[in-house]
Length: 243
Image 1 (cartoon, rainbow, N blue to C red):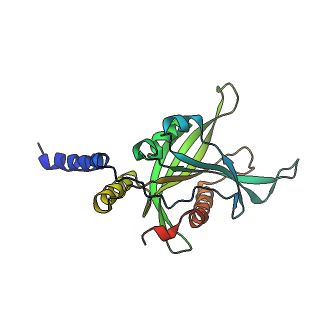
Image 2: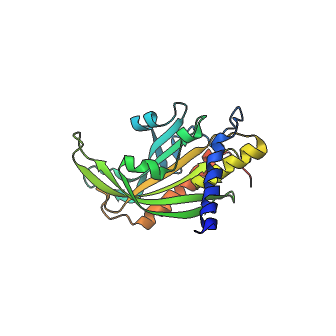
Image 3: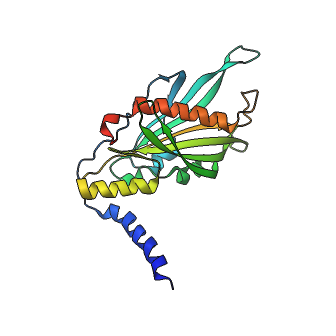
């Protein structure tokens, strides 16, 4: 038996679990995220919406939500009958942890299937902001089944690209395990317990019923990343974060 091969994952598992055995550090340090969303952002109109019943029931009572459907007119594209501008659509979700982090936020790979997503791709990305800071991002590709009637018997599949990251008191990361290690380090070295915010931005692409031409995934990627760049500058207090 190869004991070295077994020992390493056991040590890592123990370290990951031990963060929840550390003593309570008292008052939690705030996340660097601003939870109050603007009504508009660089041409996008943000229509704020409440969390779903499933989110409220599943997550801790002191979890805080900021969610919005974001619409922006596609340049030069209008409906033939009404003449209204045809919009792009983004879905924005910011979930701020309560006192018990483990009951407040987790990897979206765990909760997205309950929202109709079948994830088929996951990759790491990063974007550089105009303020020279860099945000690490996790990118997910999925197919989301959306109900189309009140009987919940008819569904339409939408191709979806999602980017997400976590914002703590002093750091930003896109990894669940990196976030856990940061918590361990800050509790042990600084005696600090912190709140984390999970930020996700999603956009459908491909064959969309309200857009005449198919939207390639490259176009969706570009628009989501541009939105995140603007959102991050507006919603994150960069003075709190390490450079």
